Length: 271
Image (cartoon, rainbow, N blue to C red; front, side, top):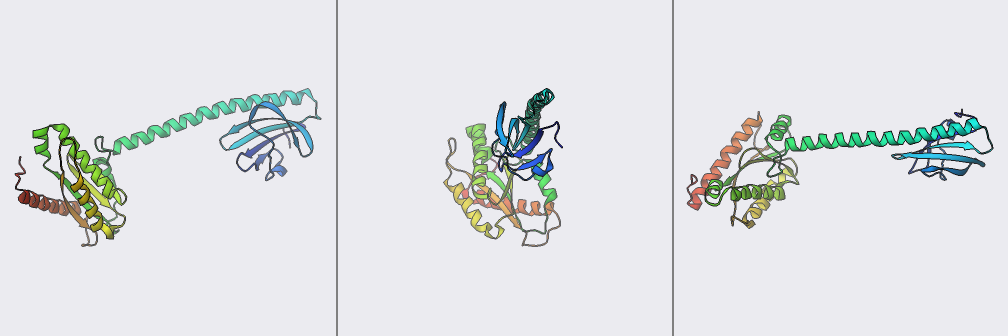
């Protein structure tokens, strides 16, 4: 049934031009190709009848109100004008609600990003690490890498904290280059990082080779080179009971790697 005699309301998919809603349900599924969103009254031919039409676009949909020109009742003219005003108001309200929803979504996403991201390196932070480790299924395939920069204190003391920040950012950038496609990178302390690999774990040795080469080729503004010690633990090694057990083992291996570095380079790590 029409709203008034000779008057119909249609909801049209603006992409397919299919009528998806109508006061006359027999029209649903038909196409309505000759109606465009316009604030002006249009004259169209619908079912071989001349009609006046006013419409508004709401997202992917077009809401159109039509009235047969053969119906001259002033009440119908007033009715279609009222509906036109309603459509205008509804469009404004829809835009307002959409803008608010988008703003709320943006603010929520911004909060989630900042609360889980390290400000200096843009890696995931300790909060994100703790949250993800709580959800880690130890029965899946993974590789856990604990990393720590070598010589950071010396760089800070001799070249300043800008040099130290450069080394921390360089470390994170080298990690992103080598590991980002396979897992997540977390900065959990000053120069301490954890990488959790969950993709292509069987290729971890090749992935680490890429990381080693990237570190070797790095040169910065304040420092000419960078060195990073790391310890790797794989899920295939044994059955682990907790993330704490994994991190402890990775930490021990990292410190053995660091000890070897300082022994080989003849550097005093306390300097």
